[in-house]
Image 1 (cartoon, rainbow, N blue to C red):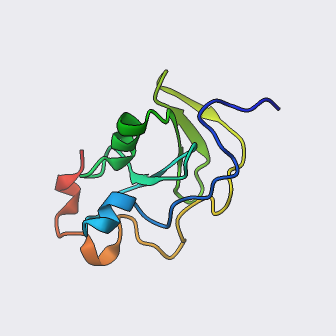
Image 2 (image 1 turned 120 degrees about the vertical axis):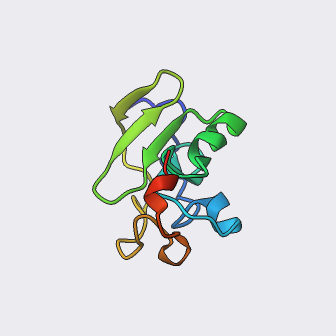
Image 3 (image 1 turned 30 degrees about the vertical axis):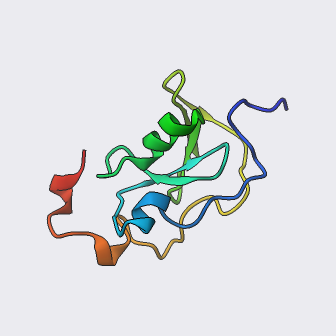
Length: 115
């Protein structure tokens, strides 16, 4: 199989949660993994929208869901969803992690804060 531009199957995820939300005591709804460098960012429904911000800052065009039971990829360049290769583990955040999360930082009425 030929390599897919924007995907590096050998790079592990940066951690179990959104890098920026973790650094700034924020919270996220769902998580996305940069398929090129492993950066974990929060989805566009999350207040921070850090996965898209990462793409804008780096030009890394492909993300993969970092949610249990989801294995889809998204290409920002052409707005396509596609099936891709297995990436270095883990494939998703810990099953014990709350959604939204982290639980101790999710405010009351969080649903009204989603995009």
